[in-house]
Structures are given as C-alpha cells and as structure tokens.
Image (cartoon, rainbow, N blue to C red; front, top):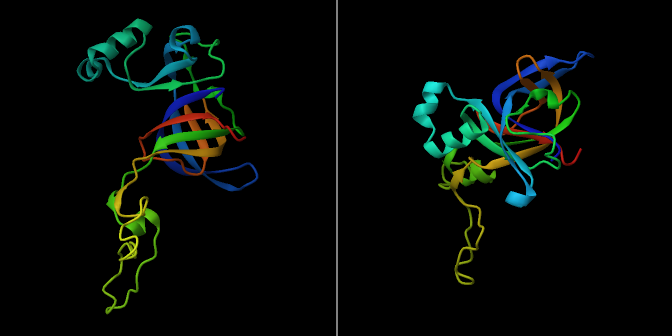
Length: 213
C-alpha cells in the first residue's frame, strides 16, 4: 500500500455531480491520524507505521486505557485513541512519530479499497445466510425454510464438510475494492465515496489506495 488512513462511517446520502447525475455516497470521517509508532526492518523485520484515530477525552482515557497502552501513547507524545491500526506502506521514510495523516492524502477521482467489519445478524438460517431457495409455501408442504437435503442415507451416510448450514451471520472482516472517491472535505475531515461500504454507522474503516486501479 502506498497510502492509507483510518476513519469512521457516518452514514449514506446522495449528491449531485456537475453534469446533474445523482450519486449515492457514503460519508466517512477520515483522520486526522497521528503516527504512534514507526516499525523498521532492522528492529521489527518489516516496515510499517502504527496510527491512532478518534482520541479520547483526558478523563475518559484515565478510565478506559490500560497502563501499557497509556505508556505506549505517552512515549509517542500522542493522546490515547479509541482505535489503533497498523499500515504497511511501501515507503515509510516520509513519516515520523507524532506526524498526522489527514484526509487530504486522497483526491477526488481516486480509487480506494475500504476494509470494515460487517453488520451482525446473529444466528441465521440458510435462506438469509446463504440465499437458499425456500421449500413449497403451500399449507401441505410442512417444509418451508429448512436446510434441504443433507446427504445420502446409506452411502456415505454422513454430512460432507463445508455443507452450508444455519449459523452466525455477519461480523466478518470484508474489503470492498475499487471504490471511487467523489469528494474530499479537508475542513471537516470528510471523505465521500461512491456507493456502500461494509459495517454499521459508527464502524471503524481502513481506507487505502486501490490494488486493482
């Protein structure tokens, strides 16, 4: 990755382009992200920077941040943050501990990849979780939203591994690729990207330059 930033999903809205087209966009509060630690090949075996996002109020930090993390932030002279993420950049030489990464690293028209944790749906059946068909919905069917055939009863007399079955649905790390940046608001630290991104409103996102653009 050449550049990246951590942000928070605010919600979705729509804006008009200069030619009058209506564009659905997701509003993301991106940065500022202070650099908390810089990792090097000599010391850590790889190059990366560790950045924080969404700083605590001082009285909240005393209650919610443990002593090791407090010392970690104090060493970098950075206020404790709610989120701490590592960005493995191709070239970290331009960053130093204490520097801030702001939303202006991106420009309108660029393509980005956005990673987040999807919404949780709890324990779900196969129709919601795997998009299976329902059974006949007539009264005499008595089998409407079941799994369907599980396996042969004589040979192999077992359910194969990876059979799609009911279970926990959502709360997965998902990356949406090649999303276009529609607008950058540097004054309010807002990034407007086309379409939907993973996760609920208020969820933490990692935005980086696209690997397929």
